Amino acid sequence: MKSGKRLKKVIFLVGPTASGKSEIALSLAKRIDAEIISCDSMQIYKGMDILTSKPPKNLLRKIRHHLLNIKSPQEEFDVAEYRRLALKKIKLIHRRGKIPLFVGGTGFYMSVILDGIFPGVGADKGIRKRFYAYAQKYSAKKLYERLEKIDPEAATKIHPHDLRRIVRALEVYEKTGRPISEWHKKRSGIWDSYDVRIFGIKRSKRALIRRINARVEKMFEVGLVDEVRKLLRKKLSRTAGFAIGIREIGGYLGGEYDLKEAKRRIEHNTWLYAKRQMTWFRKDERIEWVRVTEKDTGKKIAGIIYKRLRLRG
Image (tube, rainbow, N blue to C red):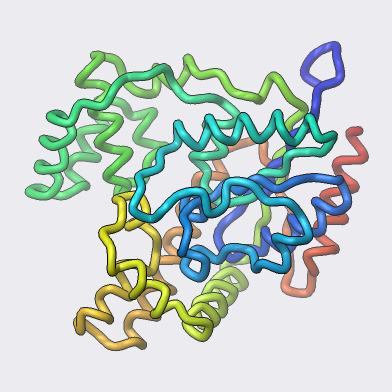
């Protein structure tokens, strides 16, 4: 406990894509009487069920889930809106006498819930446009190198290919004269207001690659191409358009390469994304890691987490 009074519990179950979080979460939620809040930046979109590997409908009926299918893929969605909605869900679930269980792999979403979001430094379209034009002309890498000089602390937490966050960090610095890392230190989240536990799922590299490839294969079998074809009939928001599979299937539909190549690209890009997720989570020392083997069932891992929760009370 973080204070003299007993705090209400909030649990996080995080890890890279295809690590088995959904199955574990379902079993854990039953044992601790929890409701699940999605911590995934793409599962908020409707009509992207296969693309984002949402839990199947039969699982959704067993345990109440929140922040799934709440936006059209044509709508923009940002981390500030996610935080606002998630904080409301925490209070709602507690009022029902249950435990909020965040499940997902979007580390930035976890961060803004735990630690807050820095006070508003409004967007400046002119500055952003200039930085995006610079990146298009000289590469995102050059822009990232500029960030490393201005704000090395922030640069260590932003991937060199994450152009959106690179531009945002540079925009904040140009507008305020202060690094975004300084603004982040003024944040306030739930970490000190609730009894928070964070469990991370860790699998071997070989096992994770095998699971990713098996998932991608299954996605194609159950209609991924048709789902993406339907999505591409309308203009997607910039955030929805970042979902892995949109560009890869789009290239296939546009005749740039065959279906086998589209599948290979999705497998490769999903693995790169999983590596970025693990890089983010490894930096957070609050995460309690649970090592999982191929023989371990979701029920078994949920049991291990449940025992850890009971030990601390």
